[in-house]
Structure formats: structure tokens, C-alpha cells
Image (cartoon, rainbow, N blue to C red; front, side, top):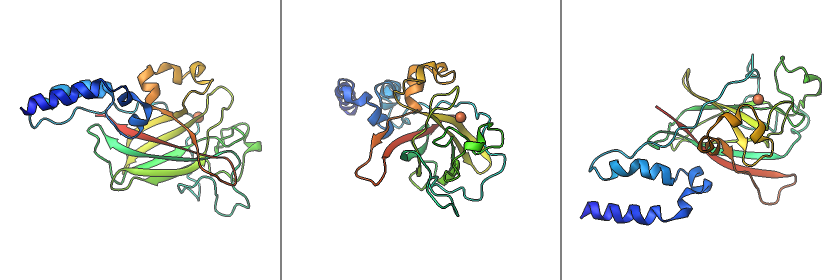
Amino acid sequence: MAEQRVQRRLASILEDDDMTSDRDMAKGGLTRRALILAVPSLLVPGAALAALAPTPGSSEGPFYPVRMPNDDDADLIRVEGAVREAGGDILRLAGRVLDANARPIAGARIEIWQCDANGVYLHPGDRRRASRDSGFQGFGHAKADAAGHFAFRTIVPVPYPGRTPHIHVKVLSGRRDLLTTQLYRAGHPQNPSDFLFRRLAPDEQRRVSMAIRPRAASPRPAFETEIDLVIGG
Ligand SMILES: [Fe+2]
């Protein structure tokens, strides 16, 4: 009886196209693919749900800070002591850190770094650093809460020479590096020609793409996005 109920439920879910939307993915919902992977375990009493697909890793790139800035909190728009906020469009970047069984990784450290609105990194190796926006923090970190949630206030990433817009992300547990990746703007016209983005399979591209939406009224342009960082293995 229980097995018939599970099979009926699976049949109805597999007919529901909404299950494959990016929004469901961002909320950690079961995608059609994940569900198909899960079928055998759903039919075996007591078996664990099948794994979520991990967030694909990517290179750290050359601009990870050589020295941590004094202000490295989760608000990259305001730098302690700076006279003005960062330029650019504000982005609330929120999400969860989960393991492959959708369990939160509480206490994980999430780091992000990206170029400023002028396309310049907080790094001595960026040759264009003369035009750096001193109001932008460039790097920040947050800690995942008990449910794995984290949030940053940063800017919508912009292109810089040779790259499509992206935000670098690193997830650590203590000193252990769990994930290093890059997040992209979903649908950005430069994505298909980016040398790193185009290496990813289409489903991997979806897992590192931020669907960015405008936020309600704000004194300056503001956007938001949510993304789950799934740590594999
Ligand atoms: Fe970069």
C-alpha cells in the first residue's frame, strides 16, 4: 500500500513541469532529475533520499585576497571608515549551504569576492587598481546559521576585461575548503563566450547561475537573488 502511494505521488510529481523551475532549485526543491535519481531509495523503506546535485567547483582565480581586509563583514557596500557607499547596483545575495542529502551545514564560513563597479579587484595584482572604488569592500564573509542560511549585501557583478560577470565564492568548515566556485548572472549575454562558464554542462551552469530580480522601492537600484550551495561527497 505504502509503495503504491509513493508511486502515485511520483507519477503526479513527474507530470508537473513546475518542479523543474530554477525557483524550485533555488529553494532546494526536488528537480525532475533529482527525483528520478531518488526513485529507487523512495521505494526502499528506510533508505535515505538520493543526493542533491553538488554545486560545481571552479578555479579560485588570481584575485583571492593576499591579505584579509580590516573590514570583511557580509555588507560589502559599506566599508568601515569610508565616506561613501560602493557604486553599482545593490544585490542581496542569500542562500543556504547544504550537504548532498539537503542537510544544512551549520557554521560553515562563506566567503565572496568580486570586482567593483569599475571592474577592479581589491588586489595588488589588478593592474587597473588606480581606478578602484574605495567604497567597495571587495571581499566579505558570512556564517551559515543553524538552517544553513547566509546573506550578503554586495553589488550586481559587472564584466571586466576577458570575463563575464561573476562572484567568487569559497565555503569552508574550519580550515577545510569545502567548495570554491563562481556564481554568474543567469542569461547574461557574455556567459556563452566566457572561457570558464562554457566549460560547464547546461545543468551545471544552472546550478551556478543567479536569477536576479529587482527589489521593492529603494533609494538606489537594488536587486536580490537566492542560491543553494550544495557540497558534494
Ligand atoms: Fe574573477
